[in-house]
Length: 217
Image 1 (cartoon, rainbow, N blue to C red):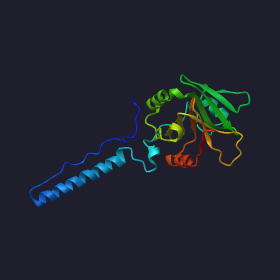
Image 2: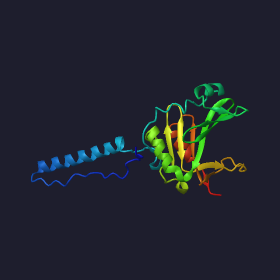
Image 3: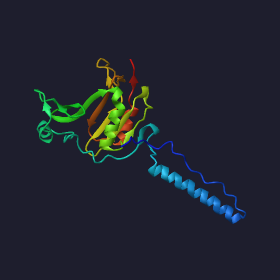
Image 4: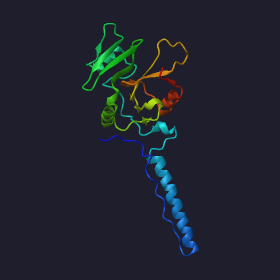
């Protein structure tokens, strides 16, 4: 399956000029043209990938079939996670673990005994290949920021009913020593990231992204 993106560049068809010999025919031509324009606008809004959120946060399609990742759901206890995912290997302290897959090894983090994050990293040069794999496996992403964000960052989100799956061209992190209230995000241009976390709506993701600050320092 090829990678699907919003059809922003699709040409809008305009009706050919109508020059009827009589006024009634002229009015009929005008009505026909108006109908085509309105119809084209409705197609663009409902089927052409239009987003009411923002152009760089085009909402493409729901991913309601995403209820879990390898059987794991956010909020599971360690015992529940082990039962749901026999391949989960926990560390001795019981606060984190790993899952080995054919694609990558994933880290699994628990907070106060509850599963709250699954993540992994890959070579940033492999982003396009990872994108194809995820689209083939999970379908069209709910959100595609495109390469319009800061410094060429691209993020894809699959907003499922049980989890949110995020694929980023570059991994992001904050400076541990930055004690400000909202430290800026920084990029690792050598590696991309995959993150699985609790369900989030496109609006929630957009609001969170609006509050992000970025830095190359």
